Image (cartoon, rainbow, N blue to C red; front, top):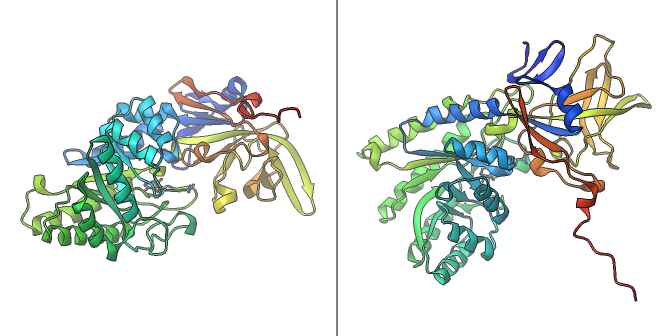
Length: 432
Ligand code: LLP
């Protein structure tokens, strides 16, 4: 079966695009459109590359669940022993509902509420990634009020340019994230004085969709340098959390392979450990928080062409998915490959693939050479990360179903929303 470029789980068979062993035409018939389709084997193979690269090492690979927080995906990764990176009480609840191990949860985020701190302390999360001096003080107070000690890392901002889209670059000095590198030492001293905190590690995350190893190594160097400075003051760092950010191929990007990327990081850490005369067991444990690289290329968005129309010189294919479903093109001008589920040899036309939402920014792909008829199915590829998890109900549109394909089986892992659900919590005014 000819697989779609670098997406082995999605391939043409009998001229119909399949997810593993299931034709997407069958999925559309059974579940309607738009529908998010995930491949279990694609997720498991991404996981196993990370797992192999960390085998025999003190390391914990977490899944940044903001990329895709469907319970079935969390459940699958939890069964394989993944940790989880969360950023809200809602995400905490999801991980627990999916059977995730709280002692493998790291809690990131720049503005945790006191209630979220309480929930995470009660659950027994592995570590809070603290992003400001104020948060240190607040967390200390919340932990004290519960008679608990909060395990913490400080998220330091290494001021490294990850060379990615400005909206998803987070490691630069003027970002809202983390604590500036030059303030980190003072913040650690402050943390060490607070009675209800226990310093565990250092955390950094420099951005997303990074396609080179160098920015990760540059950030790591700064983190190791800080570890040395802290050691000189008697503050012991037990783990390094290097965040996520590893990119995927949407079009022609060539990110490092998952294993190669981790190997480069471990090589640098090992050299640092040896130089300090430590044994590997005395060196820091290494944590990661990968989102996109775990699920991005394991999912697609299945949609149907409603209308073909021409305005001026442009040809438009209006499909039943829109910016409320997949926000990335509108928000970041992100490029997702769009392919016909049953390609024909009819002459292709240059189409803008747009949704029905009342915004000119509602496009999913521009200038795509496709042979299309109304009613055709299209697959929007590489949509497993930051697709459904960023969707909204704009224009009072119900969000699509989500299914997970496993060989020849299809599991409905989230039902399509019903219109009545969308305003079930709203109230008309009382008569007066
Ligand atoms: N850890 C932290 C603290 C993060 O902020 C993020 C992502 C991750 C880990 C996971 O990063 P990943 O491995 O997925 O690159 N919505 C954007 C991406 C925003 C990323 C936000 N933070 C997009 O659709 O491209």
